[in-house]
Image 1 (cartoon, rainbow, N blue to C red):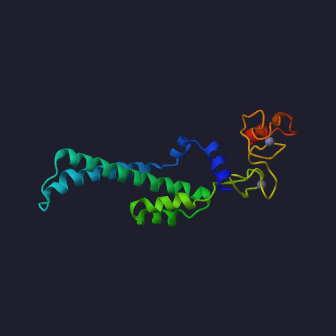
Image 2 (cartoon, rainbow, N blue to C red):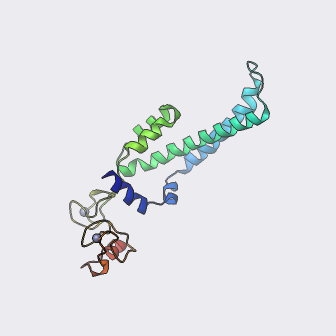
Length: 181
Ligand SMILES: [Zn+2]
Ligand SMILES: [Zn+2]
């Protein structure tokens, strides 16, 4: 089941559409986090007299790598805040877990445990998961499938890649039906 879920998700969701889930506030927070890291490494830390000052190359390396890490962390929290609701998961709980768990463990947990994307049936409003072909309440076709073997097909396919079935010969061509919905 897990492999089929990732397969259909990989086909429908491209990387750029995933990037659009990152809200503006988290981009701003990421830039701020980067600036704060630079401030820490170039202004605050050199004033501490406990350690001898680091050579400039090493300092640049630490400042940039910690800045990038902090920025990615902010972007990830923003992504989770938009990704969790469309999977029917609690946004608040997962944002707290991502922020509290050290070293990005919360984010790893999130991507291991996240549920399939949930959308609403256009006909009756029932919550349907992304791998469903038909609404469980009203049988509305929510994604294209082969009329012979009932596996997922892309709306641009002419023949089923699993069984070779001619998709245009279906009573209601799956690709057209999904395309117009
Ligand atoms: Zn329905
Ligand atoms: Zn087929």
